[in-house]
Length: 431
Image 1 (cartoon, rainbow, N blue to C red):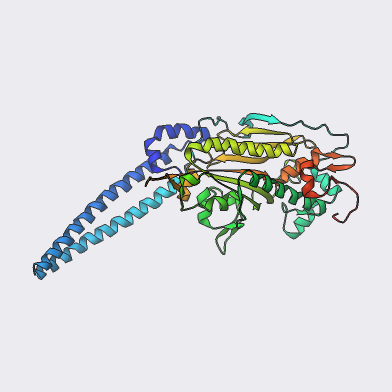
Image 2 (image 1 turned 180 degrees about the vertical axis):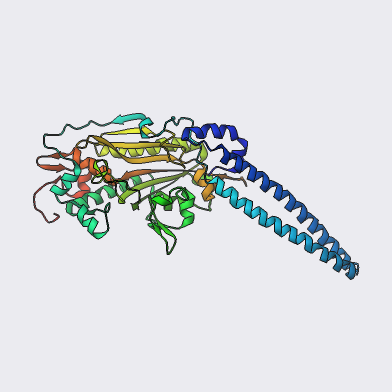
């Protein structure tokens, strides 16, 4: 959430920059400033009346000391009017603050100066790419055929147990999934991230803190009886660990990682572009989150992107890195890089990670601050997060790119985790 002072001080610049995100509601910006003017006016009136009441109270105390009880009682009765006016002003202030808050959450984060203009995915800017696209042998098939052939993931069983978009991983498919999770966690931990295992449900305050509420409530599963939300990403509970905290500057950056299942309602329409593992309602993901000093957050963003790129390189999957345009970047992000891997049998790029700098936008909602050594003044921290990595599409690319008539080869880096180097028709205790 942008601060009111920033909006007031940079109105014209803000309006111009938000056009990059295709946000053109100037009336919201002006309504915020108008409400803040009203809030300030009410505060002045409140302070003046409170000062008058305090003065009256001192006069009454002096009259009692002088033995003038009758006059003191008359003055005391006169203060009732002031107290009623102050109460009415407080109610008006609360109403204004509520209106102000409702307007502030409608304004997206200001995009970084390097965010390109554009309306959607087609306008994203390719930064770099790596890895060689494999040439598959005749008869190569997409991953949804491979998982049926080798009986490693069962969509029909998942549909029976829950519904579409909730697959059941079986045998070597389950072990490969677990291997990827452990590999990603180990790599993150070796890079200085502290592992946590957070809850899979969060309360409304947590959803608000990271910007899922009120923007994305339709995309989350809601437990109405408890007013809890199933997490769409581990970013939500991890970042909220620091809600309402004042950190020490010398402790920054703080680096956390977590594996969690993730739950999203918006799996979209079913068709050739969302078949198999391409889009699910429940999927596994390993996340990295950093809380940093504002002076270093863009250096941190590049370091996080390099770390994610290293993971994909170790899996030997062709990839490309995209800078999201204004029309594709999220409501809360200032700058986002998407990582896409190439699934050769489908002949398409699949997004597997977004790494984003939210600057102080989330921190302002979270009241996440830090203090320099010897300084009484607090500052808003910067928060960043990235998928390292989302598993379904990584698994889809691994299956498709490494298939042969003999089976699906497991990347060497994963074999210590899986305990096997090939998924094939061979019968074994895991299948």
